[in-house]
Length: 148
Image (cartoon, rainbow, N blue to C red):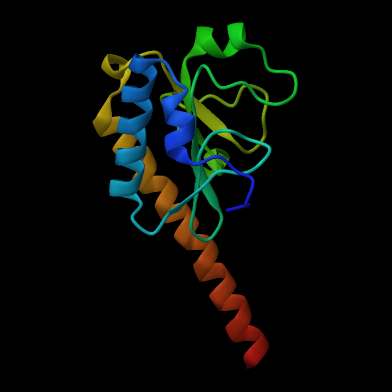
């Protein structure tokens, strides 16, 4: 984690109470479903990312603004985002994950804890972890080919 980054607790403390509860629950689900993931908060983003082999997902609280361009009205209307960095590779027959014009990162939004379908979120997190593991397997295969 870069030395100037805020900690997760510092970010959480600055959120409205209802949003704190939602973000804490999402974080718990991520850490339960993807135990190999490590949490990172980068200088240019005041929200947590989770990675293992690559970036897997992130939680973007509704009241946290991106440093450039994204307005609080837009983010607050949508809610807190759970984003999947390799969302374009995930099965999404029901259209639950939203591309919103992006090619790779897909998101889903929650306005409150009652909007959170934990079973569905767990399924997405397990799938995201499997996709992340495939990146490691591909890399191991490439290394083996070079060694032979």
